[in-house]
Image 1 (spheres, rainbow, N blue to C red):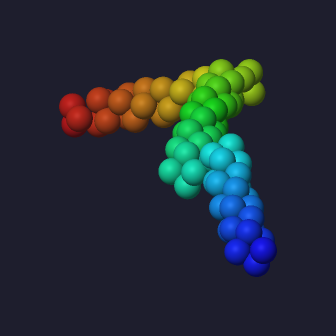
Image 2: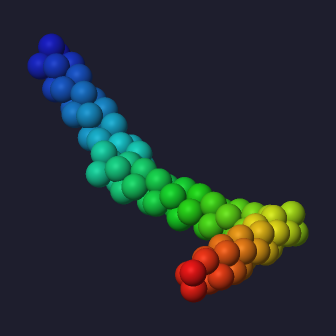
Length: 93
């Protein structure tokens, strides 16, 4: 009788171990977790890069920045013309 009970207990323990081993594959392995992490980070980096690029383009093409850029270009051209006129008339003397 004790032998039958012992065999039954061992069989139930083996069944419990094999049943728990079958449940584990539903959980992702460590390599799958790293692959998912890598994919998520790459997606984040790609999205952040696109958003940053778009923000800089919108900033560069905005009206106040364009006006400031044009104003500075005009002032720089005026200074260049003034320097050229000053040194061209002094250069003949």
